[in-house]
Length: 186
Image (cartoon, rainbow, N blue to C red; front, side, top):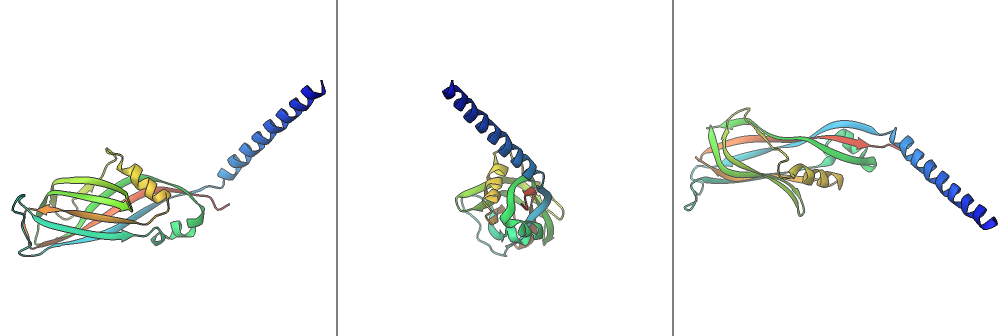
């Protein structure tokens, strides 16, 4: 009888401890801070006059990259050590300006990456003109990769590269990753 009583006491204690710890986590999550952020950069692409044209595939080649630091966002920087997670809401690329355009990206790609984690979107026959927008969806799980990079609290590099239908042109592509951020100051 004493053995059963001790076993019941241990089980009741374990159950009570589990409920208490679970309640503490729920209470702690009430202090979560959620905010929206836009992590982005400008890619200044220049395709010079006489840029090498591929013999095998028609087009003038270009490549441009820029780094994005999580610390550039004041709210993210403020809570950096208390970040709980990121949730990508949207990824876009918008043409801010074009000089000597328009031009068409016949075949290209845009990538967001850090180390071996890289999300890539293909660009086909995109007319580069002011305010034209690339909507970069999650059809291939690209947002999941970006979420992984952000949840590891890593800075990332944005790259656009490909081929255009003409040379002697430049444009600025503004790439933005819109995210919902959760942090807990406790």
